[in-house]
Length: 144
Image (cartoon, rainbow, N blue to C red; front, side):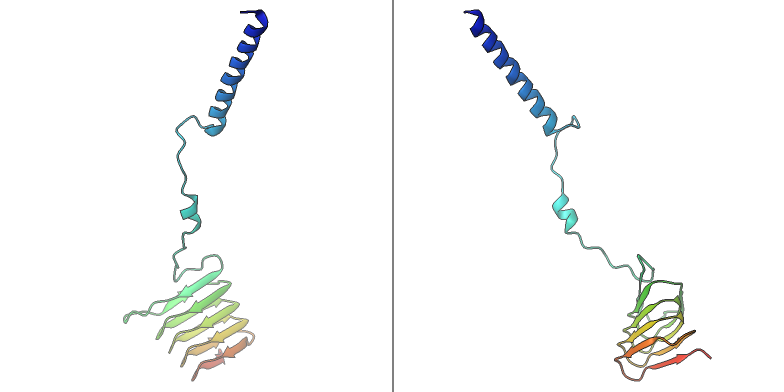
């Protein structure tokens, strides 16, 4: 074999080895076996609703058990009362929605109050909120 052919063959072999080596490195830089990830299922996972805790500025109050005791919650950016027949004390809640029936609610501070349920008694402290009462028989009054 002449020297030009040997050099060409050696250069081609080195290029092939380098290409195989690089493709192995870029395919899996962690050094272990490459495993498929479950990113599609993780992105479609639905968060479970959590009640009775202010999470990310939102409080959803729900407990319709027959032995429900009066409940007190602190400040939160917004609250929604879904329960019925409860006695609830709230801190400052700028936005409050009452969807349940026959609740007694005492709120330290509220700017916007929406009542969708019926026969609720809501007492607020401080400045009167903007009220949207879409229910029937609700009593919305300032604290004495």
